[in-house]
Amino acid sequence: MVPTGGPIGPQAPAVRGGGFHAWPRLYPTWDRRLASLTIVSSWAAGWLDAHGDPTPVVDVRARVLSAAAQAGVPLPLASLALCSFMPTTLERLREATHAAALAARLGPLPPIAVGELAGAPVVVMPLTFGAPAASAEVEELLATGVRTLLIGGATGSLQPHVAIGAYVVPTGAIREEGTSYHYAPADQPARAGGPAMRALWEAAEASGRHAVQGRVWTTDAPYREFAGKVRRYQSDGVLGVEMESSALMVVAEARGVDLGVLLTVSDHVFDPAWPNIFGTDPFRANCVALADVLLAAARRLLNSPG
Image 1 (cartoon, helix red, strand yellow):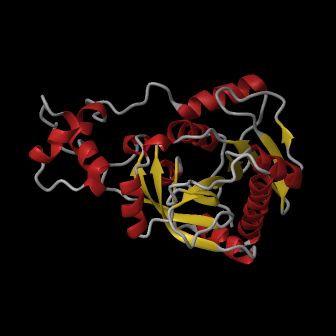
Image 2 (cartoon, rainbow, N blue to C red):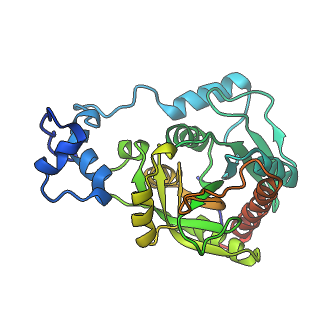
């Protein structure tokens, strides 16, 4: 069933004549696996401190409600949304739900289409690559009444047994992006384990493709995925690397909504030759297949009792 309806740490001392490489001198227990956590915990007290008034200057719900009123679009739109970063996936989602674009844009939101699945209205909406943009778009989408999100994306595999074309269902993520720290302290894990994640896992297993679930690594910097870090995360059992999941998980938990993410493997990051299928017919076919799994998961949620 789809539902309806303080400082992190002390300010770090200034470092001169050493920069990043001086951090081990300041923190003898330095562990590069926890680099982002250590830095955020120490420096974030300044830029995450609300300084006595945590009221957002721009209220996202008020902004979207105003835009909807001006456009003459009644809210809520739907309780469940199907989203993706890939145009081919979105095209299949719109086709399968007979989704029609809204007559007017809702202010800051990307173009929204509303269709029907299992007798219920569903939203289909594109998301922008990267944690900051995708998180802001999800915030705006939630203001339209959405309470369950199924999101399709792509990931680079860190594990030889997770081949190109396989599915990854993230149940947690390493927070190496900046957005999530505005929603939760550094020691809070990014996680997904609700009905949406479980429906995606069941649908992925039923698809006949190899599917795995577990942790992924979310980064803001695709050109800073270092070979040593890839090997370390591989040894820790991390399945893949991508750019949004940890932020989306933390935002969803902060807003009290249900989130499931499904990723198609597009490349092998663990291989120095970096084999990938971006821009190819096989990748486009995998994106269509990904949409079908999202739709199957949505049907499971919409048809579940209770």
